[in-house]
Image (cartoon, rainbow, N blue to C red; front, side):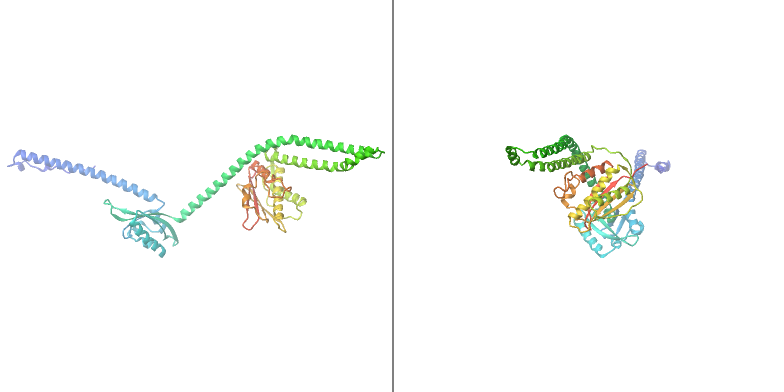
Length: 449
């Protein structure tokens, strides 16, 4: 609080009052006291306003310093009047050296100069415009900046300059890239969630269907095996009867009913029935496995050994000429069931061979690679087949979906494999390779503890 100046009354002497009416002097003294009180009050208010102004200036300064965006306040002639730390850091100059400098002196090329003049023209005729210009950075490199240019007006509404606010496009591009990656990850997670939910619903449906089919199939198989034995007995009996001298009536019936043909045809009919029933039973078994009805023992599994065993059995069975490129890596242990994982790998390898052969490839090949990091292990199966048709990508793991000819596949292999991998806490995905062919990726968590 400032110390008030001495009152004017203190300097008045008694002699000064001589010859002057006392009332007049009292009136003068009262007016002087009022003026003095007013001066003191005004000075106190001025000090308070100065303090408020300092606080406001400090607040604005802290905001400008904290801004990560570039800020330039320039005059109508394009001379820098105020700026912030972000621009100083970007161009490698102090705020004092930038004040009074033309904005044009910071531009890196002629194209930016032309865009700058165009932006100045438009910002005078409307409220604001956006311009992309290149600034010369502190390291001498060109930095692209997206500036929003708006007019700056005084209290009377007259335009006295411009305010430029912007951010280096490198940061915007990185932010956009991160946003796009996050969006893609979210879409994949959503698709994975929808597919998992769809598979879970199908699993519940399939479990009921498999249960309902299991009993009649068992009846069919059991009865057909009994009929097989009965048929063998009847054949032996009829063979003995036909060796006797039969009456003409029985011989006529034997020929009319084609008894010899029926007896000869019965074994093949029985075998065909058993084969069909057994195939149906296998499908039901696959449905049970798909619906997670079958629970297997979980233990430590070394993946390299499972891959080698799967390659061996597929080549020994249906694909002896299949060229598989695989190099064993360091031991890699996951928690799961070796039999189920072997089933998945054999299915992926067999599918790769079938795709290459069906696509007309003369020398079908498969390249298997194993990658591991802290997040888990990934097995890639890249074939040289024709690839996956775009309209089939979203349906690959659906039950009963197959691109194989009729009788060559049930469409359960990949869906069962998908379910097994999910039970192991992993993922199974497919994509087309740029150089051609398809690649299936099996991801599993590493065994802990």
